[in-house]
Length: 97
Image 1 (cartoon, rainbow, N blue to C red):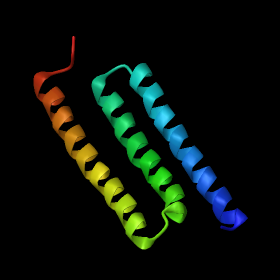
Image 2 (image 1 turned 135 degrees about the horizontal axis):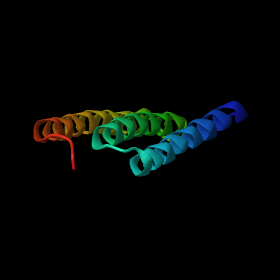
Image 3 (image 1 turned 180 degrees about the vertical axis):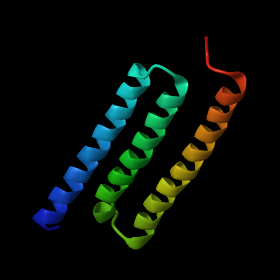
């Protein structure tokens, strides 16, 4: 594997981990549930996407790469759906006291 590809993989994986850490910090620091959900959804989607992008050159074949992409798409869909359902529940019940 070329040095450029190894550096690209390492950097994208590291940036993805930074997004996960930022989402965790946002979960602990943001004041209300809706802003926490927003930050977590964005951080998880982008963080996992960057990690998958960094792992694709190391996948070992097109089938493994396809599986990585499918897992990422499944997480995107499930995360967005779950976040929408939780946010709707919070909106209907009113802000927490």
